[in-house]
Amino acid sequence: MDLSFLNMLPVVILPLLLAITLHEAGHAWVAYKLGDRTAKAQGRVSFNPLVHIDPFGTVILPLILLVSGSPFLFGYAKPVPVNFNNLNNPKRDMVLVALAGPMANILLVILAALSFYLLPIMPGFVGDWFLDNIRYMIFINALLAAFNMLPIPPLDGGRVAVGLLPYSLARPLARLEPYGMFIIIGLFLLPSLTQTFGLNFNILGWVLMPVISFIVEMANMIAPVFS
View 1: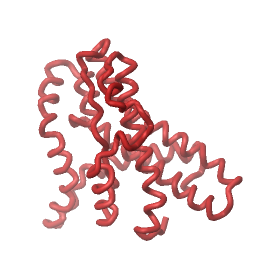
View 2: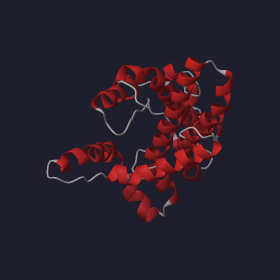
View 3: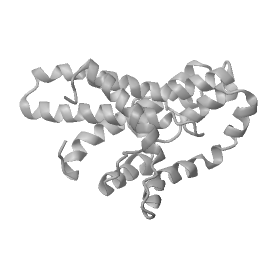
């Protein structure tokens, strides 16, 4: 996809908004179904992106990454409030609520791949735009699913790990949550910092890219989107 920054915006904004919106709505809906009405009461069980948008995380940060040529497109929405004490089975249901977001992104990957078969009924210029949207929809959702499953609280993968690990391991991991975002930011900055010393220490790339590639290949088995 050889597109300039301005040409990229029309085919990135919609996939990014859908990915983040469905991710957060998935958390809110599963929490509601499992006994916690906190997110429901705040209107977060919704496909309306306006209720989920965080001005910095959903708009400004992704644009900064796009303009800077970052190898990763990252964004986030307002966290869904969940009172785990209200859940029917707090330890088990915490895992299910956390998994709901990444699973929503995987669902969007599948739907995007299936929508490839609508291309023959579209005019040429519309089809080109739609195909680029499909490709970005798959990549962005694969990235969000993989990234959010990193076992670092407060990411979804961290909450899953806390819920599944024995107490002796879950407790110290849970205590990392106040520092989790600093760890994540450090991992994002690590490649640039190490390149100063002639190294390329890219932990996020080493961990995420194989998972992202696997999800994209699975999408390509449904439809030849990237062929």
